[in-house]
Amino acid sequence: MRRPMPGVSNHGFRSLIREPSADALKALGPRSAEIFARWQRESSGLGIEFQDFLGQAHLDFDRLSTKLRKMSFPAFQREVRELGGTLAQCRVPLDRSIDVINRLFEICVPHLMNHDPEAAAHILALSRLQSLLIRLVVSSQCESDASAPPKPAAKISPVMGDRRHDASVYVTKVYEEERKRLSRDLHDEVGHDLVLMKLYLEMIALDTNRKEFQSIRPRLNEAIGLVSHAIDSVRRLVLDLGPAVFDELGFLPAVRTYTSQFSARTKIAVTLREGYLPENIPMSHQVALYRLLQGALSNVLKHASAKTVKVSLGCMKDSVLILIIQDDGLGFDTTRKPGSSSFGLTAMRERVEVLGGRIHIQSMPAGSMSKIRGTRIEVDLPLSGGMQ
Image 1 (cartoon, rainbow, N blue to C red):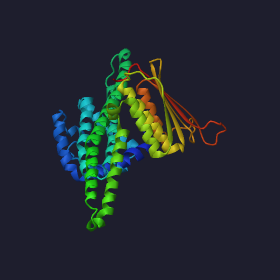
Image 2: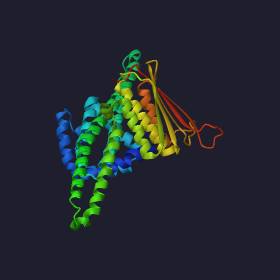
Image 3: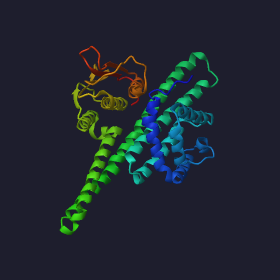
Image 4: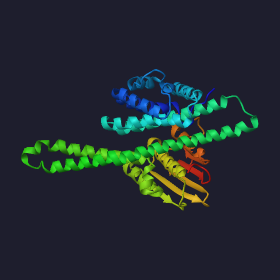
């Protein structure tokens, strides 16, 4: 029996990927033909036979949206794995398969930015869908390799283990590069345009002080308020996407900025304790720690009903990075069978293990006899190995 994809539960798929992505695909529906034509041209430029992906069908986002909304995660997983198996049988290289999926995402993003009032939410949804597609395709191609005629037993087992680990690292790297590119685009293009739009509206507002223009003043002020809100949303999304913010601020300043803005937005007091950190932390480790902090704080906001969170970040003997997140919330039973609420923790654990690290979780559920309450997450991430 095939196990579910690590880091994804049925509930997580439904709430975080299926429904938001179906909405995003619906928004792209009117431009299906234009996007399909460009994707077909660019796939050919990458040396990919387009029929390997869609057969003789055409890309119809309305149809895909309807189909996705009806699918369970096992059905979605099975269909994408079959596609990955077909690509493997057609001898399509793994990196080319990933390139083609990424190109479709890159082609869709500008259409959402230009025509979709909910562009930010829909882009983030498609980013999650893109990541899951790549992980499933990689997994299916690894399984195809594993089911091929066996080579001498002494050699195949460690090689397959290395390939699976390398594939996980590679997908993580590709995914983070894509988020980095999207973060830059949002900051440099959408954010810049919104700031200019606000400036122009404020200049127009100065010209409406005369009595004959007083009737439009309330609507103009409302428009300025909406643009200001959009600017704040883009800035928050850029921080959520990362790690492009590292290039501008550096790792520690980016962590400070994120925790500060999280506190301001949620009214949960977050204190950051900074210990010694080496100068040249691999980007893979910086991204992992940033994502783990995001995931932990997101769980605090959604489930813990906490008032305070203490974050500690440091390094032990130049060999192990340590991140600790401690909240004073409700806590939960760590011995219970993983369910829908474990989606975030499972994804965090997988991200740490890919880099050879460990995650330790201690929690005291509400109503326990212990005087200590809340959840403590400790991440130990060795500096040796990992992608640079």
